[in-house]
Image (cartoon, rainbow, N blue to C red; front, side, top):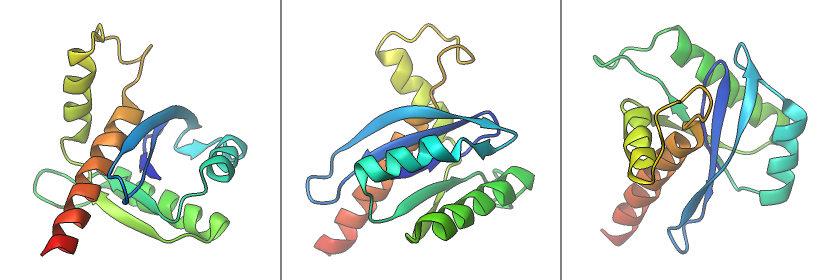
Length: 138
């Protein structure tokens, strides 16, 4: 299960290694980066992921700012609450890729009203699954 952390919305996607498929799930609303843990718990119970992939926002020079630290804190809380391992994903440009995907399917550009956070989580997850498959085949 992948997450695109944000202070207002947290994008969620689910995928599996066997088929290499993934799908976006409903975005979880957050208040100053704190998700509705009950909603998140319901998703985790429903999908039963083996691990979490959490996008860590990095600056373009690779350094970590405040939002990156908060994303790591979110990941650590996921691990603490649900006992599953988590893996970091460099999420630089994932939102941009998500907006491009959304535009391809007719998104009108009002990202406040129709956020693309779960598409960003999907982008992170697809990249991660592709990397895992490449490592396994080499």
